[in-house]
Image 1 (cartoon, helix red, strand yellow):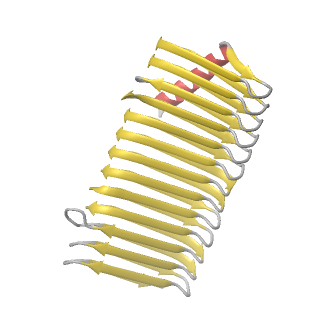
Image 2 (cartoon, helix red, strand yellow):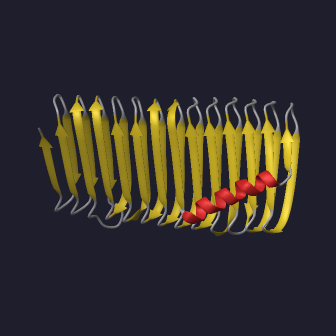
Length: 321
């Protein structure tokens, strides 16, 4: 975390001290290509519409900063190849602006994308390698989208949406030992995580009503999934395929639904836990395989518990109070 903060701060300070490619009109285009090490590039799109900026950096320790302020249908793209590169992108207000960062290399790359206000913005980041980081943040706004994709080992993706409405967040990771976390506050938001491989960790936290949280972990073992939702009429779902996986779902409020499935890949020994507090809540858990464990607990009235286990040596505990 210390390395990320230092890289981010340094890149912003240097960007202010260097020249910037700017657009304040319609249909402008800015292209910059840099090769080597420790290069710095800054691009700004101020208001206007239909503007396009592209940055290409090939080397090590490069930094690219893109800022979109207001405007409509502006696009900012950053492509970096090699290691220890940093891409910082920011959108404020406006409508239907898009920013995209692509990093390919051995590892140690970082993307930091921030959206504040506005409508129908999209931020996406793709990384290939090891120990890479994607940080995406949205504050306020409506119908905005976050998209993070990583392929490799030991990568981390974090997405935060605050006081937003009708917004969408998606993380996809393939490899081993990756971490994905999503946090949303507001209403009618959708958060989804997909992980393929072993020893992944996925976490989702939502506050507000009408939220959807989904975690899918495929083809691996020793994966961990956790979901926490507050308020009413929320839906949480977890699907795990493999052995020695574990999952936890916690909900507080009215009319919430938790659904989980754990399927046996090569062995079993999966653990599932569901906890709900409130009224008119429903929890359902399905486990396939041997030596699985499940625990379901509800506090309140008019709640429903469902559990199904197929295999040998499985155990289930249900508590309602």
